[in-house]
Every structure is written in structure tokens, then in C-alpha cells.
Image (cartoon, rainbow, N blue to C red; front, side):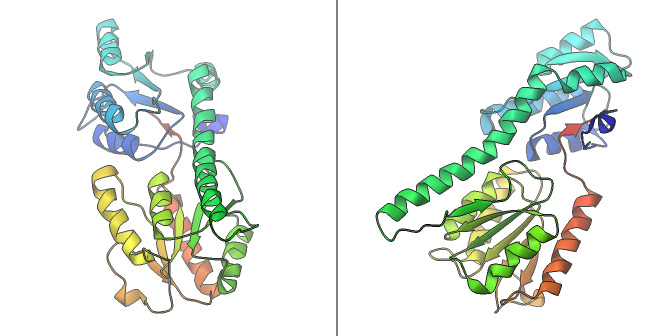
Length: 285
């Protein structure tokens, strides 16, 4: 139903998988079935609200419990567990349309759109203040082809405007990806990796203070305790590493200067992974 309304649908086969997905991503709307294997709906809602309170206090995930069999008492149990409302199954298309346009869903969509924009603006402002104390740059430290959560987002982090990497952003964008480019150091890369789940990441290994490899080692350590799903498609830009010698946590290597055919292969592989497990905004029944 939601697919016909222009939404992409993220499915969970059981309650435990749904719980992990809820922790790994933001959604405009979640439909949570009462009766699921492994963990039932109220249990998922209860555990997620506990996690949300500690790890994501700035965003309230809108959750609707659904069931073909639950009675009024069960619906009350779902609300107490942390669901925002209850609906019976099957949900008519008219009700789905109303849900897609209801205030909590619209507000969530706007908030998620602004969240990424504000994060990039904050990084840019911090870099601008740093530039005022030293050499000034007429070019923004963060450039992006979009200010929203793009379907196919690509993060590129390099230490400077390296001419040998100029073609990287051009090829990425020409092939339909939306790129966020950061000129900075390893700490900047680490901060951006923690910001959101990017579809593909290219990090220059030759970053100041914290190298690309060391940045990823620290990120993977943080990721183990802070995210349910491991970030995929993280590629190091380097002329000294090869696929057979990559450290743990690195998914690939892109040589310098950029080989267009190698880059296209990396992007195509990433797209195959995305299409096999599509990230989206709704967790259906």
C-alpha cells in the first residue's frame, strides 16, 4: 500500500530484526505488528523506547501498532509499551493515505530533512571559524549536491582539493549519486561517519592528525557499541594498500590517481548491495 503512495518500504521478518532496524535508522513511520516471531510488537516497542530514551532523545519515532486479532485490552498494552496508536488489519488504502499525510509523519519527514542539513552547516561553520584564525579559503569546506537524506548518498573525505581526486566527485555525481565532500582531517571523517549511515564512503588515507585507516579503526570500535548494523561500502583512497592487504573494517581500496573503471566497479557493487537490502523509511507489517 505505501509503495503506491511513493514510499519505499523496509521489511523486517521478525521482531528482533525489526528492533535492530529501528536502532540502525530513522523512519518517518513505523507499522509494528503485534504478533511476530522472536519478539512480539509490544516487546519491540518497549525495548526500543528504552534504547531511544538513552541514545536518541532528540527524535521520537512514530510507531503504530497493527493487528488482525488484538482486542481493546491488547491495544492498551501496546500504547503502554510505547506505541503511539493502534490500528486493525488490514489497513485500508484510504487510511494509509491519511497516515502518510498526518501531522506526526509530516513533521518527522521535515525533521529528518533538516537534521542532516544542520549537521553539515555546523561542520562548515566550525571550519570557517578555524579558517579565520589562519589561512582563509574562499571555498566551502563541505560541499553537497543535496541537503536531504539521499537515496544513494556518497561521502568523500580528503585533506585538500587534490587535483588527482577531482574526477572522483564528478564520476560519482554523473552516475546518479549525491555526494557530500569534506576537506579536512581524520577527526572530521570520524564525526561524519557517526552522523548517519552513508550508502558509500571514500576516505583519503593521507589525512592529517588521524589517517583514514586509523579513523576507520576508531569508527568500527564505536560502531560495535552504538549501532546494530555495520556500515558497508567504506573505501580507502590510497596508493599503498591493495585488496589482499586491507585492514579489518575496510571494504575496498581506490587507487590514486582515480581509475574510472575501478571507481565504477565500486559504485556498481555498492548499488547491488543497496538493492538487495534497500534502506527506506517505513517498517511494514
